Length: 451
Image (cartoon, rainbow, N blue to C red; front, side):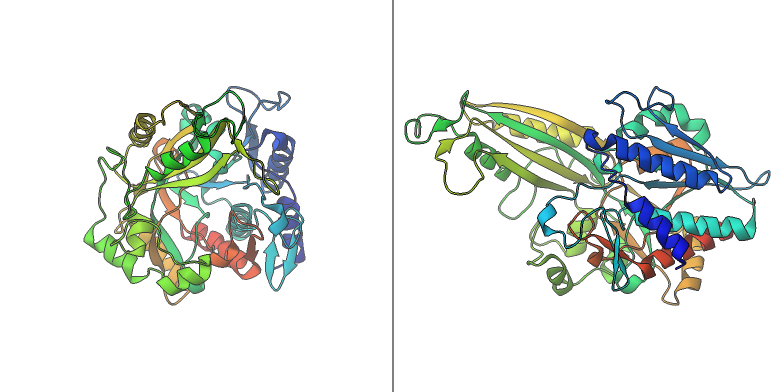
């Protein structure tokens, strides 16, 4: 990798572009502006877009901007829409980072920084491959680029902008680099993604924290109540206990399941990766079924009462849990959330009140036909890069706005990423190897040339 490219990557990573936190809006705008300048040098017309507004971010309540860029090619040429995101996850817990989370460091061939992989590293590598393609091939195809500033928190701004951008988004192929390769960097084409939805459930009881001796046995306890509520979401075998949650699910075909199982991870490799037995989900289902083709309800965090050193003998006045759901094809995001909400409201502990906030009904899952001409073209390109040829994956993760972009643009999605388990995305000490960056860059150049 050239020092100039490494320097650009470091600059991009240095922005604390935490799109979910309004306190980081200035950093997000600075990051988007850096990307606008970088793309402008390649001959793109670039805008920073805000829902219902122009290009000013003077109001503190504005979301991070969406970067929209376009470079026209030859008359009648195909159009590629590139999607990526420049926002990153919060770096917490800070104490577990071995190097400062927003000070990029290269060690043993890996770049360590928040966003090194997800998704600044992957998207920037793809864009560098695009730059290589433009330098050698010229203006043969039309290229449009959408860089999201809120992917990690629901893509609110982009979702609001899409209806007004439908004509401008029209494309033949939707190219995304925000997923993982198979083990040992074998290329992988993503043939399906789960949808996602998330919310916060609040439980309130007494008007203040109470002395646990004077009021113990009298007052209801929201901390206990929230634990009971989240425990009620699953049955003892790990299956989801919410009535109506699974309505409409479309099961994978025999071919899809067989291809996914043939390349699925082993229990041993997953245990080495996560540090404990991979026993989540429903008993009796395989790892691949549980992670690729089954929906989930996960508790992301529970908070209540005192958590400092020593003891503080109180009955807390309130508690809350943050919950996310991964959805599979056939499920309605709105219907799934409605089912979970009704389940929790019906079980609200006596003497307490339940409420919901930060509700993101999210977007639906999708699966793509394995026999598509686009997949055959991509497989040929990836086979030139790696004699093993590509694997097909049905990814348990989500890129929430892709369903919306796919429908609005009319483009066929082509999702190929180069992540690996050791990259630790969403965790402290996130990293991305220089070898992975080079693979993503080469893929960008080759697929644009093929298209």
